Length: 319
Image (tube, rainbow, N blue to C red; front, side):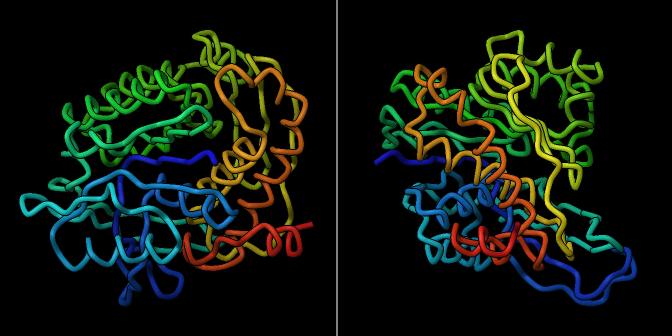
């Protein structure tokens, strides 16, 4: 059976109680968060085998995060705890319509200091998938470790997936962020990216932006646009588009991650490998549709992991 490996940040989301700007929020609830972790859990809820690759602090927050993923069925054997660094924290407030404000505490985050020895025992197989984002790419040591894992995955015939998930307030220099994302985009077989994010990454708009990011050999592009839905491209060719699903959104936290987790889960269902994607092209419309359902379902409840559903619940609730 194929396995999904996700690498990146694992953090505490202190989510606001009620609707107000962050500066006016008085109460917060502790939740597990981190975009790649959300992707990992969604795929697990959909019946896929998964593992998370990261480092957290040797503190109660780190232990809570490990316990949370373990309870969801994720393989946590590659998550270590550091005495020299901290567990990452994020404070999140909610505005009208489910939009959010963030404040991150990550300057000493343990996931920024993962190294190759942390994952020397990771063995990818053909049919496995490696997924990563950009938040944990801030340090040179973490970038080298991501590249080490990407190379191992490619050598084994695993599929490589990337979600830039841009967080501008975590980078002092936007050009450094842009250059880092552009570099790591060239390693991916599959990229999920928002319309606004793609414009920033390519300095282009519309179809010109799509052509630019696909010209390096990218196979599948999942282009999302919030409540407006998403499009899927194969080698730069538009294959399908979905207008999204009308639901009563209360919290958009994790919606994009859930969408990507659903998309990856369906690719795994089809036995996707870098060399088999041509045969999966005809199914991309249905895969996109289910991914959009996953994202919509997650917005109907607060939180990310807690709001995600299994296939039966998603299909029943989102029509």
